[in-house]
Image 1 (cartoon, rainbow, N blue to C red):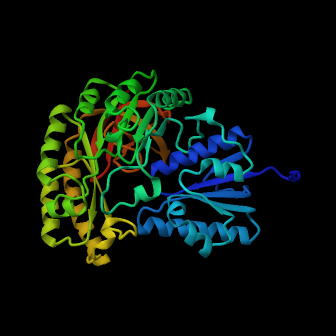
Image 2 (image 1 turned 30 degrees about the vertical axis):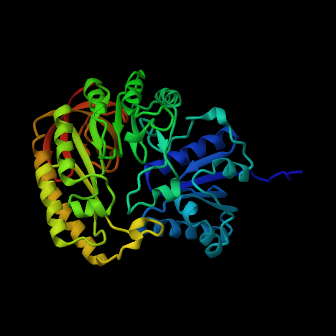
Image 3 (image 1 turned 90 degrees about the vertical axis):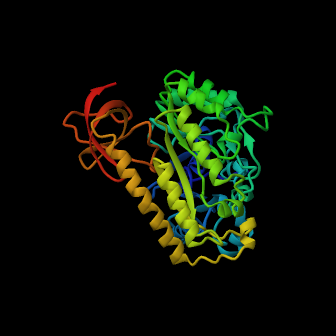
Length: 438
């Protein structure tokens, strides 16, 4: 027989790492709410008694942040501020046994696919009928939507398949239903995320179905922007670009991590593509969708990388002129095939190379931004901060890309679209004034 509690539980979920983790936390929140359990995200008030830390285990810095966050919560528990601390996510999936030994104060550790077990621990039932239902941790006008889980790629540096398993697509019907539900809640922009978007459908429909999914989502009334994140360049399905070009509510934006441009590095990373093929692909993409915003991600300091490789990468960036670039320094991850290589680039050299590469991109970004001055862009207002509004164009995703700074004496509703004329350009941001509402 369960003993009656003197106070009602309140669960705080702390999410670390990527947007895919954010979605997992939102799904957990939705399940808890449906079980009549109070739940909050990143609660600063400390009026909760249970914490779930959703961890990242991708690279060293992320692992360190996850462990420090767990230790902070354990300390609060030791001081009597918390009753329970639970840990889930990628770090927990990958290092569960070690963590149980090293941090025994944690009440339970769960893997990435153990949502029903977390709910059971919290005396809640898993409700299968809630597929797609979640409590958004983002502002209500945009949301991430995970179209698949896991990855079948074998990139030598990546530990994601170890933590997330093989690629599993979600059904198109479920995703359309979820999008419709999000729109009812006020969502105007959906960011499609997966470890590998272009693989979508191969497992359940026996062919690549991302284009079909995009078309069906574009039919959802009230969904104004659909954005694509994390497409793999090898065997890229060009048909999705036809859909992008033809449908007004699919942003002319593609996030396609390339990781490097030197062929010896691409081969060592097991990327299944050459620099020449990547250059042909970017040309083909831009021909199919004129004016598309291309974002990529790179790795500096992979084992065996030389100064010549870095110069080759910089030259590639200067020729390709990507709109957005992010860069990581290489992290030597156990269980990956690259772990068998000698991690021979010192940490400070990795950092300086990353800085060098970003300096090249900074110039490109400034030049591309300057070309926008005087032009008018449909802009989504995200927030008001320090007396000014911050928004984004269709060429900018949340947190990782440019913002448009808008000075306006007139109140601009958060989550609404306005037309903004760009008046100033900076390295990574724009400034503008409202010319008319949508």
